[in-house]
Length: 130
Image (tube, rainbow, N blue to C red):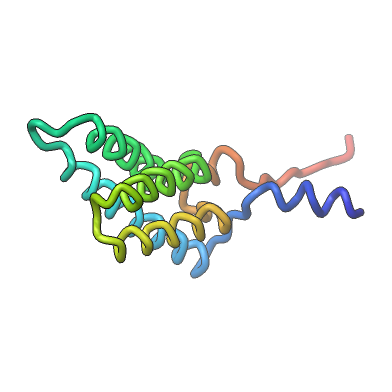
């Protein structure tokens, strides 16, 4: 029984209804901010130290927007925002907010309105006697 509990905690849940809608809103807010910040950093003459975290932020934003590989997308968002925050290229308030949202979504899961829910969600099995 104890081993089952630990294995179950490795997988995220896919709530529907109001909780699933709340996770969708969190994912949309985080991905919108990531995509906006990432595309704004692509300016002519920008060095690799600005383009690399911008590319990571755009990739994370796309993954979080669609709900595909959500834990990976959240980890990428945390890496990109931490990088930009510690280098001092962005204001700390939006970065800390985005870090918090990304960590929360990574811990809670993508919700039922995501590609992860379609691929990895719970299935209903109908077992019939023959």
